[in-house]
Length: 178
Image (cartoon, rainbow, N blue to C red; front, side, top):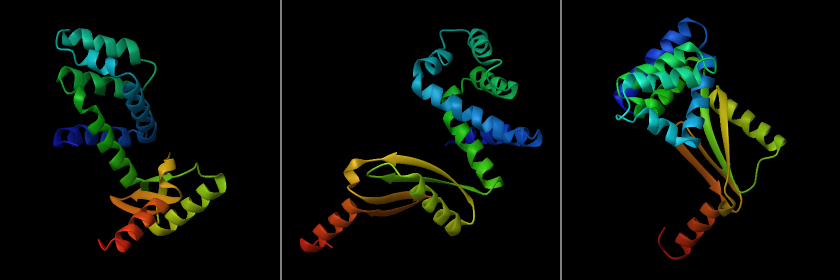
């Protein structure tokens, strides 16, 4: 994330927090992030310098007005006017980081060989809440190549208790590379 993205994301967050709408806007930014990833041509269109800024801003207005809060529409129009739409993802990340900090939320990504059952998920969430003292926003991934166990990424740390990792360690020990 660039300093510029951080500045813009934090500015939007502070405005939305003052208006007691930070959670709604976070949800809308996340939805837009997903949409932009699924439809990258839309973001490319909005960043196309061959189109006048007014036209690009009008596309934002016509496409998003009524779908997301006016603050989000205006925020995107400001990024567009300043040719900074490529900073959107960093702005969303900065916004989310401040939201999580202010609301005692930690993000975690868990990767397992098979999807977690509801009982496993709840047990993991309970354990993570106990470790961090915070609410946990959990993103789940499945990678059959792990063979078994859990790979957890949280707070910039990686906890690898997968069967694949344990087998690699054993192989290193047996080959004398440990």
